[in-house]
Image 1 (cartoon, rainbow, N blue to C red):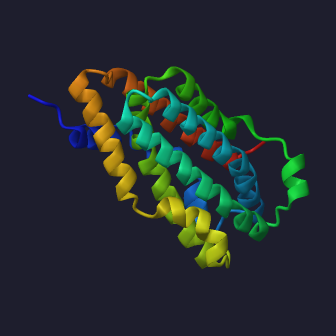
Image 2: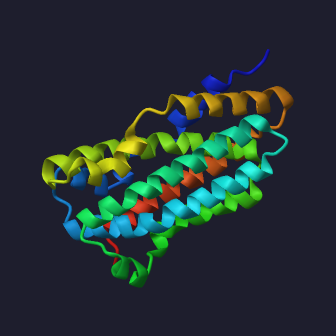
Length: 220
């Protein structure tokens, strides 16, 4: 019987859903208890994460040349990162981060472990396995962004333009979800998907995501 990609994506996303305790910072932001300097460090890290992830997704798209569904998925992700990058300056300005501070900033290793691993996937993972791992991880990221967007307006007085970066990732994205499903289904149908490996990749992505937020909460 043919495996169902949607069921597999839902199952692995549920399996890899992070423990709420793994992210101590987002609840503080949600309550308005995080210092504004933490928000500044968040944007400084994202100024490096977003372009790095975009290039990694473009590399995965190139490596998916014989897998059109995976190619479409990673190309769409790269385009999304480009949009997100355009929205970061408004958030940076609201946090008091100018170009001089951004240029002088030294990134935190615990925050940059996530994009480093995405780059590793771009060079080493089978595209279909990476589709499954990345899709599972994005579910948690989208939830965090929705929470932060609400808190920035409610507790920190940020306007819509400053919140647009988080709004973008918080919005439902049915088109990428359908593309991911098609890519995973094609891989299942042709025997290209290694579920065990994809789960391991997804687990590491979620672990590095949690490390990102823990590092921001206690950067020292």
